Image (cartoon, rainbow, N blue to C red; front, side):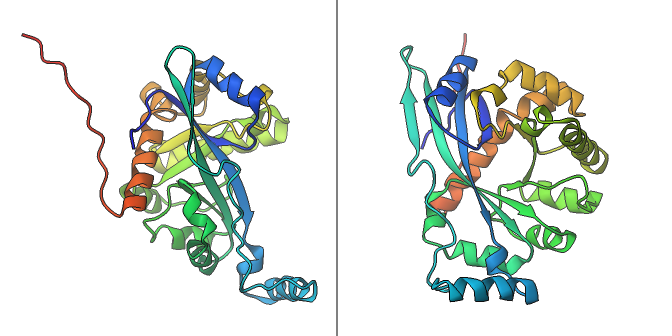
Length: 262
């Protein structure tokens, strides 16, 4: 598959005509529609066993149930515009996990294969350390309370794992804005803001900002001008290439033709 070029938003919580038209108007070429899964029923411990027991009493078969829902966008959609440009829509799965065993069960899901991008939200510091040992994760969605060491950050970079900062919550209230700024500051201190993508987490068209505003915001979040641009361009391309590689079971490269001038 051809890798799209242009500006990207890798976390869109809802998709409809209004949102799609806004992304087109702002000049985006690739968006990822997100589905979030809370894996609390897949865990271990007394609390999770109680939840599993309740599910069984309600007639749900825990072993047979596929805890990964079908994507909001079933297949990769390409919407062609009047000027021959296009908006590509891919599927992203975000899983919230409290132990690494929950993630292994997600990998065994049939619906999991329908997604293009995998993001993991670790709910504690131990699972954050554990997921760094895996090579099938594209994005880590952590918060400013996550304990990250420079060594762990370096491991994530070596495995081509990206950290995500979503600006959508900054539009909600002061507390959420402070949390996003604190996360950005943490990533800057621990890893000099390397391998960061900036997304909207949009639920309506009012949550979407044009790419130039996002790049300016990236500088406010501690990214350099180059890093800020890459957070919605090259960083996203790298994630998509990695996704293609997993699906075909081989390595994937992106070749750009050069124009030779005499």
